[in-house]
Length: 235
Image (cartoon, rainbow, N blue to C red; front, side, top):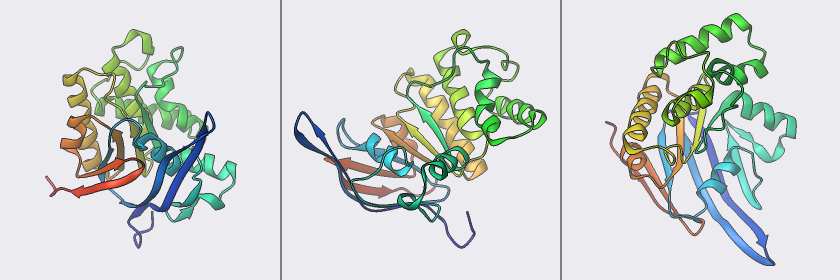
């Protein structure tokens, strides 16, 4: 991102309505939000409040019924499908509740997958994978496959995959939901530390109190609208 702009995401009156059994569901009902570079923020709220829908919209995975979304000063609605796909590949890292690793690929192959799509050389991919495995405390495990490691380790691999190509933005949708409390806390502390060291922007969708406690900013959604937007002092 250019030094003259610290805004990673800007949304203007974003709405998302869809039909379900003939009834109009208003999943997102007019959200205006700015996320600055380097934030460690959480979008929270009860089930059905619009959290995941909103994350899908700001990443270009879903299109709003109304309103505008800018990602790094690019208006998503003016981008072609290929440009959006390239933007997601190069600028956004995704972390999911279900890990979304490819079970037949090794840890190294899972982590390097995005870099492979980006055309990074084999030697450089290998170097970066070993570097980030050391960062997440999994050095020496690059040849194992996901079924041979624990859930917590799989989520570490998913975090490494999201971060290895150094995107500007990490979107994490309920990343601790399938983990026990201790493992979840460890991974959140690891992501917090990586955020501080790299300056990458993290935006979580969650209802986990541990995420809220660690976030610098907590944006509460209710019925598709921002109910509260609270910023904490820097730790």
